[in-house]
Image 1 (spheres, rainbow, N blue to C red):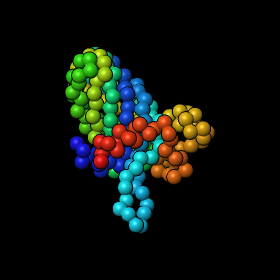
Image 2: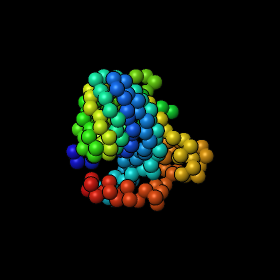
Image 3: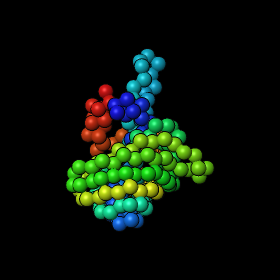
Image 4: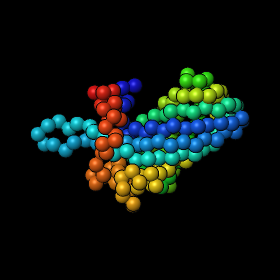
Amino acid sequence: PLDLLRHAKALCFLTVAKAGFVMSGRIGTGLIVAAKQTQSSHQQSQTYWSAPSALGTVGIGYGALAGGDITNYIIVLTTAQAVTAFCEPSSIRLGAEVGIALGPSSLTPQALSTHQKNWTLHSAYCYGQSRAGFFVGISLEGSLISPRHDVNAKFYNLPHVTPAEILLGSTVPPPHASRTLYAALDQIIH
């Protein structure tokens, strides 16, 4: 829903490969961008997007499931605390999934929450679309989502850059390579 996107604190984009029979395994990669506000006393503040921070994910699932597929996910983070959780060394994602995927068509609604050290839950909405494969099932899922420090360091040419500096700080400017992403987000949200 557009209203949800307009009020998002961050958007996470992941491509995940999953396979299994009763037990499943998943691995994937992607990025996250945080929504930021312009600071101006003369104008109404406007939303712009942070530089992207690279992410990786691994996980397992258990249930009545079979098959394998590659799925693109968008996770809409709705609170500042959820964004901060993605800046931690790792974030655990727990959820339930009911899905049917056949080739590029899919139905994958998910309910999920993230976990930090103190077991605080943060709301997020996840939408998925299968790119390829066949997968059917209902399962309980658990995933570990972690920053890819090596990719961030290489992309920004900053050996010790942290996800917090990229997403929440002002020291890492949005790169030219991300302009297509920003233009697409602006077109959808505005």
